[in-house]
Amino acid sequence: MSRAREIWFEEKVRTAGYESPEAFALAHELKPYRLDQLYRAATKELAPNLDAITVLPLALRETLSAEGLRLESIAPVTIQRSNDGQTSKGLFRLHDGNEVEAVLMEHWGNRTTVCISSQAGCAYACAFCSTGQAGYTRNLSAVEIFDQARFFARELATRGKKITNVVFMGQGEPFANYAAVMDAVRLLNDPEGFGLGHRHITISTVGLVPQIDAFGDEGVQVNLAISLHAPTDEQRSAIMPVNRRYPVTDLMDACARYAAKTKRKIFFEYVMLEGVNDDDASARALVKLMRGHLYHVNLIPYNATPDAPLRGTAETRIRAFQKILDAAGVATTVRTPMGRDIAAACGQLRAQTQPRAKAS
Ligand code: SAH
Image 1: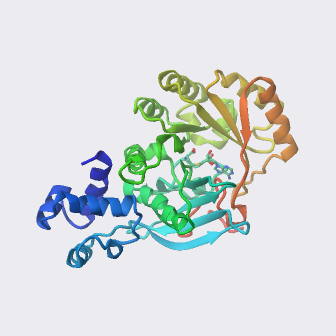
Image 2: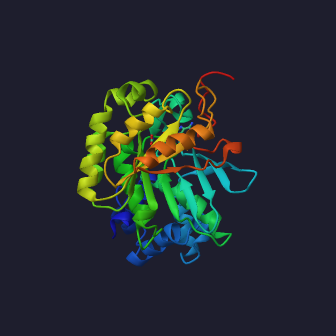
Image 3: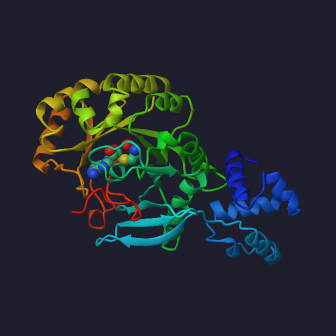
């Protein structure tokens, strides 16, 4: 069995009360090809539920279903679509009643990106992020993470489209749920299953140094994005409490080790906040950190969130900031916000069950 298939079966059969995929297969006298069919139906053919897997005998489907085996680990509660039709936000309920959000973006051409959550809530409390303002609930399992992509892949398939990119930029800190996130990557990538290439997957982290080192040793082509957001400790600690644990120098050292080891590009995310991190001095300080051709800066227009007393930088100022980076030879792009009208843009995700810190 491939590792991805094992991950999937281990989690699935546990919910039906079995210790291992072997015990499950034995109990139902399932030949290996039946397990193949089940796994392929779920991950490659994107079957919505057991009933839809008609290659399995009806009696078997009924037995598995009676035992509580479910193909889907998350249930859509609401799906909202932006006015321009390019962005869809899904709110999903987990088996224990917790809820998480994921977002599908359909870009021009056939490029599509799904932004998925790795935790219910988040413990890192970044000042500008809606998820962080609500606190942490729990880690998601590998299949719960994977199923967010599976859900939108199925939706796209009805329109003859596919997921081309997956980003771990939804709710939660992926590197605080490291093992499950790596397993979710295996499920996304499995050529016999979902089949999304590593290069089409991006993990974004708040900057957890030990995990950046571990990730550099994985030997995978998955992209790494670092939520940097400020070039000095004083500025960064003011908006990202994690900076007190892993200050800018430690973080940049970890990035240098990662780049040297993997020769892979690193994307630095920098949300533009008026009067906080958007002056010329910040741009020049950022230039000093961006050594080497593997570092790419992504400037992100701030998306207003309910309770943060922060304002986004005006577009002309963003361009001026970018110009300083450009002039110094730092590769820089400005992110196009999507789905603002349905609160589905970066940092706006917050499941409905999570309380707001204060009414607006
Ligand atoms: N915890 C991870 C992944 C989730 S955040 C991380 O910190 O990277 C994904 C990206 O959206 C991060 O770069 C994050 O800082 C950014 N972001 C958060 N809130 C935002 C907001 N209100 N406007 C714009 N970008 C935001």
